[in-house]
Amino acid sequence: MSSHTTVDLFSVPRVGVSTFIIRKVNGVDCVLVGKRKGSHGAGCYQLPGGHLDYGESWEECCAREVKEETNLDISDISFITCTNDLFVKEQRHYVTIFLRSFTSNNEQQAELLEPHKCEGWQWIPIEQLKHLDNLFLPLENFLKTNSPSKILP
Image (cartoon, rainbow, N blue to C red; front, side, top):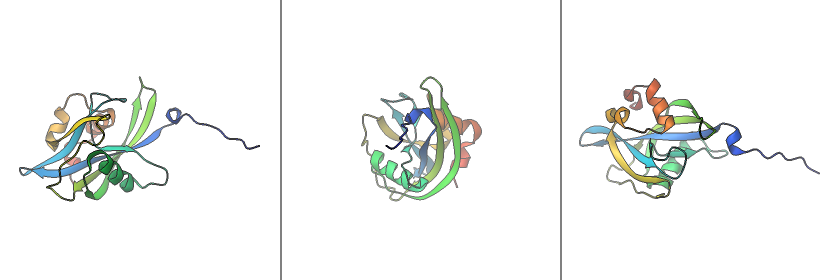
């Protein structure tokens, strides 16, 4: 008889991967944001990203999540920092890995491929991030301890 322990996924910290996708729009450095729906943080602005899968590198997770959520192709993925994110009300704990990436083709448009999870995507100037209301907790924590200029290489 084998002993097998089942662990509630939300009883231990989980790893999230989030990316600042950088693109110049009218000569201004912008990043892609969307408004969450249907989960913790509903109504908050987020970056593309998601859960790190078993055996996956941060960069693989980043590219996969961006493709699944927006159909964008990204390149030059690099690490920026991480945050420790405690969602008290929801009793969830995440460590969020923040990466930067760039669109491989500036003509490619972000598509809304998961409308049950996001209201839509928009490009906003990096300097405007800190002025958005209702930031998703990991993004809020990032901006509390980092200047928006840290997003650029």
